[in-house]
Image (cartoon, rainbow, N blue to C red):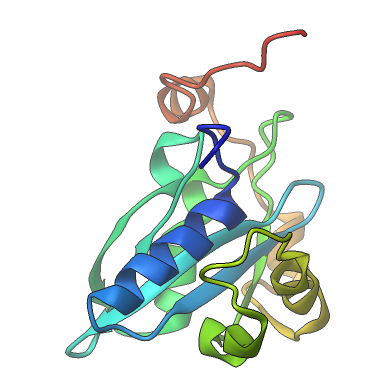
Length: 160
């Protein structure tokens, strides 16, 4: 908050804390990619539907309405627009929900100290495959129109 910027992990942690204040469990969810960066989202459930709150520089990697019946279905809602800068579709796995209450003893919501223990936990937990190897081999590249739409408003880092 001091820098006025955030990664998806920081955004997800912030959103999970805000959702907790609103009465939801402070849950995050990790989308894992090949040849690309992971994406972390805050997730919540209303009735039978899962939704997300997320920070991303890519248009389609943000919020989802709570209409997805399963976590796999929710993860797959990101598949088509999850790509690297070589236009390859890269989303491969997702985690089970991580309840950040497990880190309450470390004061994850209020500490001024780094909270990398959350990221380290996400790296260590099992992830569930979305595709078979045969499916992954048959994937097409993302078209330029989709790339341009997803990167609309994307700000490049300025050289210092």
